[in-house]
Length: 155
Image (spheres, one colour):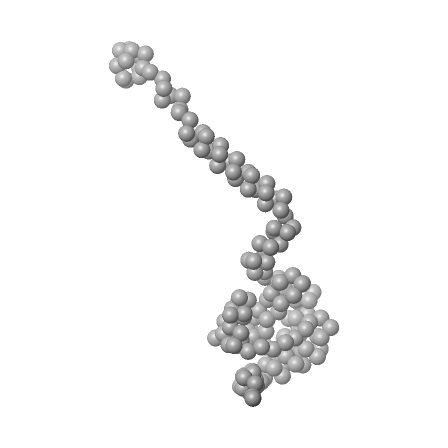
């Protein structure tokens, strides 16, 4: 049976992109691992990383150790521009993104004491606000000296 990926690779823009990526991969194989997948077949995966299936092919960089990711801008085209951009990524001159789930996992793992202290501070603030807002104000219980209701004490 013919692999569906072969049909995608036969599309001229994809074929040109793959030729470029193969040459970039040969040049930068010490710094990056390269793979190819069909963005339409793997749509649920690629959209999590900011890639629209309307703009394919695209290069996506994922740091497997940290879950950082970076969809390479669409205006980066050709061997030299792609290799230069990847060199900037490797030198950490380009900032990569994180998924919210990764940020949450890292926060819980790396900063549990800060999270607990923050939760405690919020609970104390809410408790204090509830206590103070439920207490009667000192002026509410004070009666007028003469009882005429105008508060000036002259009756």
